[in-house]
Each structure stands twice: as C-alpha cells, then as structure tokens.
Image 1: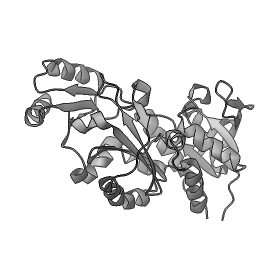
Image 2: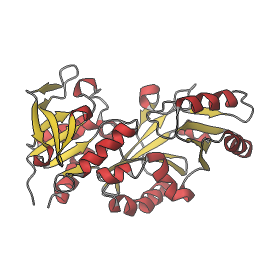
Image 3: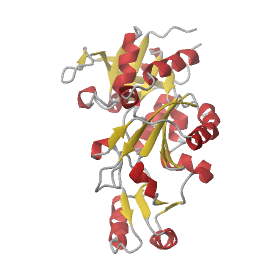
Image 4: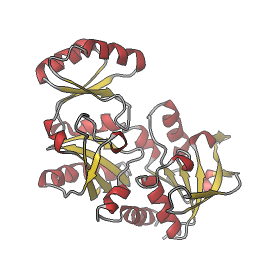
Length: 315
C-alpha cells in the first residue's frame, strides 16, 4: 500500500465552516488523527503553469473546539502533484469556476488521488446525473421553456421548481396548481439563470422528511432524516430543517443497490443521495454533507470509513 503522508484540502476557507455540521471538517479531522499532514487552500489559489498544477497552500491543524477550530501556517506555493491525496470539497454553485477547477485537478489525478474524481464530478451534475435512473425519480422536467413548465404543472398539479445548478435549498419554490405567481417566477428565473430549470412533481412525503443517505465507494453507510420546518418546503438544515435519526427502508436499499455500480465506475468515493418517500431526487457528488449528523445520532463513523476506502485506492 502506498502510504499517505500529505493531504491537500480544496475548500471554502476553513474560517467559514460550522464545525458542528461540516463534513469537510470531519474528513480533515480524521485525516489528522491518522497522522497525515494537512494543507489548506481555496480554489482561487489554484494555478496551471506549463502543464503543472500549483496551489498556494497553508499547513493546517484542526481542533474540535467551536470558535477555536483551526490554525494555519505560512503560505507556500507547491506543485500539487506532490500531494498524496487532494480532497475536492468547496461548496457549489457548480459554475464555470467549479468546472475549471476540475479541469486543472484532472491533470494530477489519479497519481495524486483526487476525491471525488474531478472528471466525473464535472460530467455528473447532481440534478442531471440522477436522471440516468428515471424510474427511481419523481416525474422530472429540465427546460427553460415556460410553456413546457406550465404544461408540466397542469399535468402534475403541485410542482417544485428550482435552479438546475443550485445548492443548499436556494431558489427552491413549491408551486401549486392554482398558484398565480408562476409566470412571475419564470420571468425571474429567466433573468437570473442562463441554464435550464428543473421542475419535479411535488412529493407530499417531504413533510415526513427528505432523507440524506451517504454512500462510500458505492455502498450505503449511514443516513439522516431532515424534516422541513412547518412553513417551508425545504428540508436543508441551514434553512430550518430538523435532523433526526433514521434507518434505511427496503426501497432505499434497492435504490442504493441500483446506483452503487455507477458510483463505483465513476470513482465516486463519497456521495450523498436525497430520497423523499420512495423516490430519489438528487445524487450529490461535489461536496456531500451529513457525516457529522449521522455520527451525532449514533450512526457510523463515516469519516473513518471514507479514509479506509481512500487508503485502499492508494494501494
């Protein structure tokens, strides 16, 4: 086995993370516990020069102490290929800046193992990749044609409308059959986004929760149920959703078994899928979250399982 010594973490600045629920923090803390040296950098510190990928990194030490959770050393410009592992962990939006990062990191992968595989991250947008499993999804439409969306709502009744490349529950709207704001909403989306939008049949089961299931190397390892606040359709915890312990249903096990081979084939070591009732709505491959919540409710130590998988890939 090729021993891991140095791990670079491409992330939003460590000063901004909420350690109570941040999966990148959990992954990095486990790497530190295993004796790896951590190096922190933000995406704007990434460069390509004469075929080599460089980053200005800072040595990082972490503590699981709110308000005093990190120390950074002096900045140093390094050839990123000298790292053993790079964690690609900045949050979306999945825009051209994000896509450019994947092109650069692809130059060093897999000699330096990038988690997740940058080429497949680029080629698997979370709300499009999932459509490869259309029979596991609610009725879904991707378009920016207002007439198509109106027809879809007429057929479905209640729908959810959201940006195709959004994240974190931002810009998610529940439109009922008699909602008179749809035209205005579509005008606003048309002004804000050049890309198509995504509309899905509204699933009443969302009131019972939107389950985040985490898979490591294609296998389910833990889950958390996220229940939306009473007056919100979104279950994301940073907008008021409530986390609760849960177990996988038989249907959810079937969903994981169906998608697992595709995740392995694409080199996705860490994935979070969202399931409402009997239907999968997203496959999150950029910077999936939920690790700390699963552990908090007595579930698996997913950060440890992930590093076991990374070490196995470094053989």
